View (cartoon, rainbow, N blue to C red):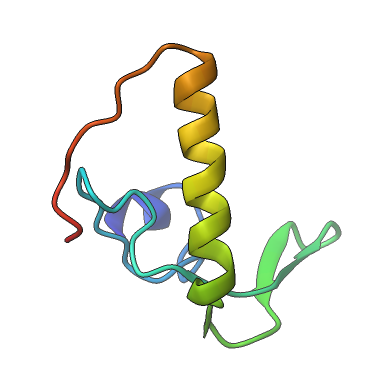
Length: 80
């Protein structure tokens, strides 16, 4: 959060903690709008959860295909 404030982006996102098994944090999304005149971002929706039942299988499928195409052995990471 301190770094976001330093960059002039206070409140730009919720706190994010990543790990080997989770590269996206809590997986929440929100819509923001850029005001070019004021040079500021405005949050125009609340943060909401992604539809994990839809998104997770797509991410897994693409990740596995990318690893196979690029001869990458995926890591075995805990889910947390």
